[in-house]
Length: 207
Figure: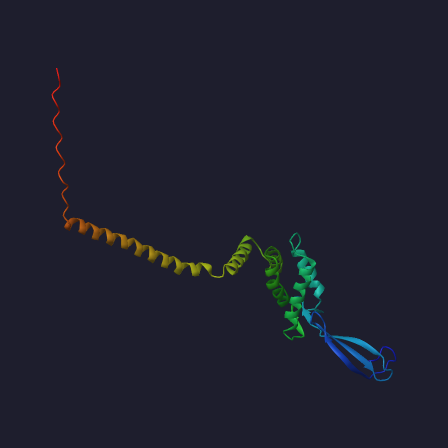
């Protein structure tokens, strides 16, 4: 690295810091000849292999512009788009590859976009995955509902079975009680009520 002041080729690193987004390293250097300090920014280059076979450098702004079209009319801010693009870039750079297929870039966008806004996810997926009709949309919507459900139907089945068993057990208990009561009624003689006093005869009417 040449000194930008005296063009000397030798310098030493005084300080190193990782950028806020984690995609670069900022180094503070000091020239060995003139002693002046300057900063350098070191980044790794990731090339994207397009469908045509051509390659181009990965650019985060292209992720933002592509997702912004799918988010038109949705409650998604520019900060949300910036965070999504940062998450996509971090996931791509974490693979440690010098080249990545464009299809893999699209797959890296789908997951965070689904968490951000499901309508925007369907729009982006319909273009990226080349939906041809309503069946493709229905399949994607069913997939979203399945992920949101998290197997709630499976968990409900044993609960329903337990409730049915409890209800059946409760319905049997009263029947047994009634039968025992009936037996008690049959075996226990009824007590005779005491005879009531006879009513006095009507007095003869006076002529």
